[in-house]
Length: 135
Length: 82
Image (cartoon, rainbow over all chains, first blue to last red; front, side):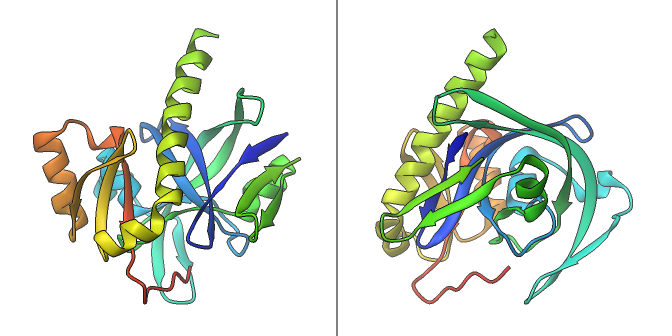
């Protein structure tokens, strides 16, 4: 199975549709494919676009720390959906996702948890500007 | 199956927008440095330096912000460290 990604500058992204019940989430989100991250998380700007209020989420389960900053996180369960190369919708989940109180410029992150749970590898050809998730 | 067809159509439209963003990334960096942009149907609908202002303007003038791809456009000096 191949899922096409895309590059923003030199950073690899993939478009996924996210669906969850609590809180209600239904949004297409470009995720930065971050093999340095243990978790998959939805960043502040996508939460604001969906009208999610951090106050309504209860107590955070902890925080994540990057090189630069620390962000509170809330655990939710949801499903990720993608178009494969065969123009078919594939569903991944339910899986653990996090809502992240990041800085506004930070993208949502697709971490190693997704790659490991669903057996994907990242194929990244910077010269051809081609990105795939493959399994 | 009908549900899948609808989702496929939505994701196909979304994919066109992100591919457009990817292809036009350098031009967008020149035109909208350090701004947030809302994109739909391969067009920048609005841009603003403040994310909350952008989302509120979308709500007031263009409908549900959830229907738009919202992204930050960095300037040439920006380095993303996550």
